[in-house]
Image (tube, rainbow, N blue to C red):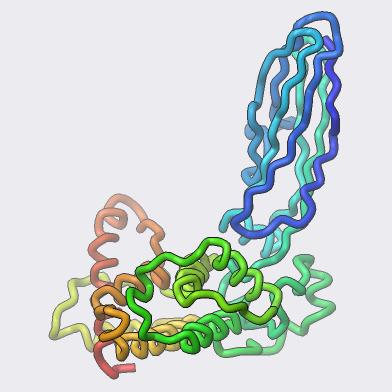
Length: 325
């Protein structure tokens, strides 16, 4: 069997966070017999390709003269973004297309990650005053450009400050704030503005609040790790001491981000007549955005996690309704 591929190099160019990009390969049976083909893993590997690549279809059969299209897709999710940001991954892979009773064809896949603040950690984000898009992914180039031995350049990530400031500007009285979904195109553009340092356009406040929730809930490590969840039931008698211990145990940058975010949501609640938000609803939003959803260790940990998250929600409510910070 013999086939021809219209290309064996797939360059996806600049690929953004939370983006799917697909390129096709056209396979033509140029021989005189049926040509069954399939993608096979590389030597000593089990998967056909890296986790951020998908191929469809992964196998097929062509009669002489027939052609078909294989779609190769790159997707940058949170796990991939984190691996790229920490230099544990690069957007390079190769695929092996094997003809049954025939030869192997090698297809190279490459792209360039357009770095994003989404999927990073707050500890990394506070190091840079420059837009994150211009911060090199390569650790050697990064070390040449920035002195990372100094302490953090900022108390909280500039991206968090920018987006909260923009929500203030657009007004906290907007009805159904944090309930009405944003415009997906605007949310994408807001992310680009945060990554490149460009000024925000006239985006709706609902797109801004959705971008804020997405930014916080997609950090590579949450502001509140599950290790800080209270282990005992919380009641009116012990909540004060739990809340104090919770703040004392928080790492400095996470503490700053937590206080800054809770202070913002307290301000939002002062406008509850207009935005119709309740402390309980904001506490749920805080849990979604700030708290780890990682499972506990072992069966007991997994079973007690919902309860501990419930306790965490009570602590959030306590911070929102009292001046204990």
